[in-house]
Structure formats: C-alpha cells, structure tokens
Length: 276
Length: 328
Ligand SMILES: Cc1ncc(C[n+]2csc(CCOP(=O)(O)OP(=O)(O)O)c2C)c(N)n1
Image (cartoon, rainbow over all chains, first blue to last red):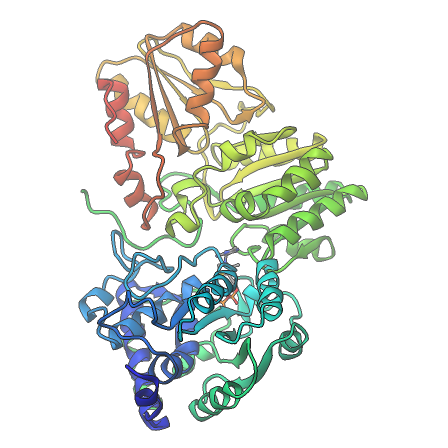
C-alpha cells in the first residue's frame, strides 16, 4: 500500500475500520474470558489512523526491508495489534479466537514470532530505544521507511523511555514518531505518579509534539498532517478513554485487566453496536 | 495432554489451590511487623496490587512508596530508605527486578549490605506470560551477587516466617514472593524457618527428593505416591539457596540410594546445581536427577499447562522418583 493511496481514506472510513477493530477485540476477549480489552478499545482509533493512513506496509511483504516499522512497546496491548493484523489479512479470525489460550500463537503480550509484530514487548519500556536504533539504521541505509513507536503513560515512568527520547532528539531522527497513549491508568489503578505535563516533557526533550483526543478520528488525522511539517523526532500525545466505545468498560473502576462472566461479553458487544 | 484450564488465575497467583490457603501472606506479615516496628517501609513499582502489599499499604499509607513502573528507581529508593535507617521491603515481579534493576540491587543494596528485602513475585512458571515475565533464572542471578541471602519459601506459613526473619537480620535479601491464595502446607505449630538451614520433612531410604519453593509441596505428594508404589522416599526442603546448607544436604544424601532435585527454576545454576557442587566438593557422588527448566525461553500458558508441558507436574516428579526417569 502506498501512503498516497492510504491518505485518501476518509475520516468516516477510518472510523469504520476502528469499529471493526473493536468488534474483533471484544470477540477475542470473550473467547478468553478476560484480557486487556480496555486498553485495546482505547487505542483502536489511533491504530486505525496509523495503520490505514500513515504507515506504508504491504501485508503481503512483511519482510520488505523498506517497510515502515510499527513498534508496539506496550506488549499487553496485543489484543489491539492482533485485531489490526486480522484487518490487514495477516491473521485469520479463527486465529484470533485463540487469543492468550494455552499453546496459542497469539499470546497475552506480543512476541516477534507473530507475523507483523516487530519486537517482543511484555517487559515494558523496550520500544522507544529499539525504535531509535531502527531509525538510525534505516537512515544509514537511506531507506524511505519511518519508525512509529507506540508507548503507554506507564512506560513514561521507565528510565529507558527517557534515555531513548534524549538520544532520538540528539540524533535528530526525522524518521521517528512516538504515539504516547495517555489513558490515565496503570496496573495499580489511576496513574500512581503525576506525569503531567506530558506534552511539555516531550517538547523539553527536543521533540516536535502535539496533543489530541485519541478517540477523535478527525483530530488524529489533523495531528499527523500538522506534525509531518515539523522537524523530527515527532510525538503525538493521545488522550484516550480506556474501554472507549463500550460504556460499561469506560465506567469500570478497575480497567487494567478485565475479566467478566461469559454471558456478559455479549451484552458488551451490544453496547458497542448501540454506540456505533 | 490432559485437559488443563486456560484461564490463568490472575497475574502471578498460584493458580489452583486445592487444600487450605492464606490470602496475601506477604502483606499480612509486613503489616504485623509494621505494627511492632516503626522502621518498616514498603516500596513497589506499580505492582502493589499484584505483589500483595495491600494489607501493609492500607494500614500504613505514609510508609508505603509507589515508584511507578520504574524498577530501577524502586530499588534505589529502597536503598536510600535503608541508608537512613529503614528496613525496606521492595516488591514487584521477579523478572523485572532481577533483570532491569540488577545493577542497583548488586551495588546500591548488596555491596553496601543495605537493609533491603527484595520480594520477587510471580517466580518461574507461576507467570503465564512467557519469557518476558517468567523469572526462571532469578535464583541463579541473585545467588551470584555477593552478600545477598536468597530464599524460595514453600508456602504461606514459611513466607510469613521468612519476612520476619529478613526484617530481623541485617543485610540484603532476595525472597521469592507468592501471592493471592497461597497454600498452607507446613505445620505452623512445629515448623520453624531458619536462615541457611534445610529441613527434612519426611524420612525414607530408597530415594531422596531435595526441593525448594512451592515445589516442596509437590515433592511431599510425590513421596506419598512413591510410598504407595513401594518406594521409600525422603524429602529435604531447602528454602535458603544462599547461604547453602552443605551439611544438611550431605547428611541427607548419605542416607538414600539416589536423589531427585526439584525446583521451579532453570535446572542449571539453581538448587540442583548447588546440590551437585556441594556434594562433589565433599567427594560424595550420588546418582541424581535434576528436575527444573531447560536452557530456553518458555511459552505462554496457565501454570498447570506449563508445568505439565515442561515436566514439573506431580506425574513427572513421581515418575522420576519411582522409575528414575525424567525426559523433558
Ligand atoms: C518492566 C515492566 N514492569 C512492570 C510490568 C508489569 N506491568 C504490566 S502492565 C503495567 C502497567 C503499566 O502502565 P500502562 O501501560 O500505562 O498500563 P495500562 O494503561 O495498560 O493500565 C505493569 C506495571 C511490566 N510488564 N514490565
């Protein structure tokens, strides 16, 4: 897929893709009975925009050395990645049904044995640094490819993230993007450290950065278009709602890991359709 | 393979608890200590909920510090607290501590003999998330750092006793933490944990199992089954990996025909290797099967599934004891 062709997708089309990703994620979580569904639903819009508008990746040639690299640093967001890979035709819906089951090729957090997954990321804080390395290597090879790294607000607490952020700016990596998913939660509940102002931190580290509602497609698209004109490295700070699109999950107190009774999943799916 | 449940039983919990259990023994023990002593503090790295520090945190919020998801920072904070007179318990997952924060545990803690008691949660195959989360080498790594006491408790009873012993003994400790519903296996009225001491839990003459951590519970079950099959089996529980109880192991080994070591850890450089090293240095050579994990990253799945896959389940241990076979 060329970026020119992808960029022609309308906001409405991208919203439709995000809806399809959400449906797939809910089906996966329902099969397993549990999972990181709140984060998946929260990042769905950003992934739709990135994969179906910004990135140049040919699903039939995932080993193309000039493919854009998308690094999911937050490994437990795997549920969202698998949905994207199914949307691209890399994974089948039958494979999705094995999400995180014993012996599955689609584990609870991502491993690079899965086609389309670039790094192993369950130990958090591994994404941005490797993204810097890839961006340096691709630049050395004069490749047109860019590197887009997703990371979570929890990962902003790991020192490795800021070591990488410092290096990226110092190396003036024009081919590196960061998508920072600020969903306001982490394992122990609401963010346990005050991370604000997140946007200013990235700017202070020498990045071009904007902040958007990560669940508003038009804002996402506009942010990418605006940032593209700025020098790199570039960061999009996403303010997302965990569980976005499914009110019951949006309202949950403990959303980091969701486990509900088997019969409840169908109700959550209905909520998604009603909202959509 | 037999049908085993696919749901994981919550991150880092001992999955299926058949008999009696206690909830959050680490947090309960820490709360009790904190009631008695004002110098007890607790640190986590965004894994308070998953490390069972809750009972302590709820009663002593001012003595609880959440460093955020920042394991290096958590260990440095614990070291700093220790260096101004506190006894700091730092709890998160074993994998993230013993990999990311190792330098800080070695230098800021161990080298200074700081009063930091590191609680490594979700050890070995307890964790369903695969190589990223499974601390299969944590005992080896921590035993290789000078001046660290390394302990893998058997159950809730021992875990509580270990927490107390660590608080009362100066220096840096690495303790494997079990969370959630933790089985009660040892008899509280008679069992006394002592740092550096192995405990013989069962006598027998044909085979001796030497085990550590919660594998000791399974060793006891395997010994029972072996007895039914006409094999007399003794069990030696070695909770302290370092300092290692060479004398107890030598005595135990002298009384049995062959040995089986069992650990929820790499089969090299953990308990099994320590047993061989210890016996061999004394010129004692005993036939031995080492049960543990191979030199590879392991897949994802529920604890029961993984243990069956990699030969750590009761059937595999029993076969090793009764038939002298373990092919994994
Ligand atoms: C290095 C590391 N430390 C700790 C963990 C355990 N852990 C898993 S998810 C998580 C929360 C991280 O924050 P964030 O990604 O913002 O959480 P979410 O939005 O998914 O709730 C933690 C601490 C981990 N996977 N890796």
